[in-house]
Image (cartoon, rainbow, N blue to C red; front, top):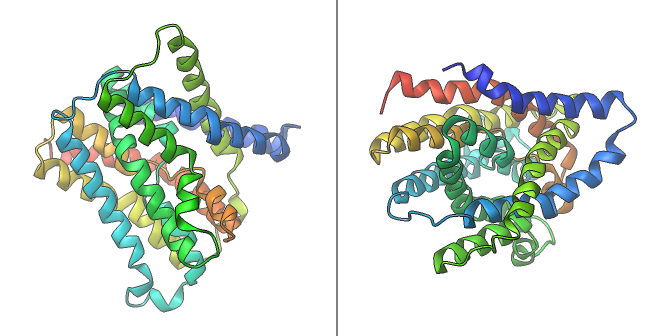
Length: 305
């Protein structure tokens, strides 16, 4: 499989967003409201629809969910312990470590949904939606916790204000009890979802800040190494340990190597941390994803399921 060709449409949208923002009149003042629209309305709608649109085979996907949760928790644990690592802990800024921890385990769902559908069709879209559904609440809690400890922001209040947590938990509950959207509104909701992917990818490009990457080099390298190198290796081990199907393993590996969420810097800035530094990490993670996604998928050739 030509992974570069598979990834090209999504990363080309990121590049287009970057170029349009930097070299046309559609600058940051235009894209900031777009980011808010995507974060608070379009993307939560997509998450809700992706999870609720068809019944989840909880038994058939239980191993995949366990693999995703285990892989994610491993990344969270590694990141939380960074300040205590020898030769690293004393050389990193604690507030920057709290703000950037989320970069190591949060993920860009726009890219994940687009790639999963292109790689495995509707079934792949549902599988990654299951992973998103169980991991978004967990990862957002893990992202808020270290920052809430070091600021005046209330932990529970921040969780209740997070639109991604609200959308995914609501959708999972509705799916569990058998509620579905009326057929008459499905086309409208589906079009909102399609718009969120394109706008979300372009917004990620528009938000890239290449001039901020030199700050906190040791911390940046550690966080991004966990995100783009260590986590795919953990996911590969989890796929074999839990005996996932080849399709589920492919989706898990995509999930494990995604660039970090473009909204990481929004959360950091809103909670009073160094949003500019986190924006630089988001930029570099987006660039690293061009290499880490093919790397993760190629691991299945090295150690096939």
